Image (tube, rainbow, N blue to C red; front, side, top):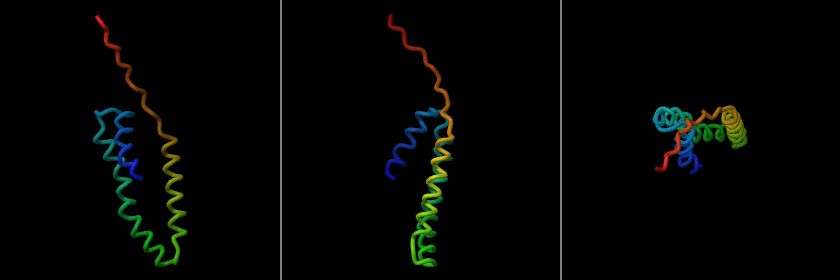
Amino acid sequence: MGGVGTLTPLLIADLFGLRQFGSIIGLTRLPIIIPVIVGPIMAGLIFDAMGSYNLVFLITIGLLIASLEAFLLTKVPPKAVLPLPSHK
């Protein structure tokens, strides 16, 4: 999980550039923050109700599959071709 915090900003900057970096990083962080806050509480409630974490693992696997599908459907924007510097 440590790679998510480190690699996500690098990937966003590489794919989309720095012009819209703040907006894009803000949009990508919100879906990450919500499960971090709600997940442990939900897992505890499910364990208390069912005596097992099996449902929590199934929910996690389902969310990971959905995120993988979203990742695979993402289109990479074309990069601008910059002219090479001339050597005089």
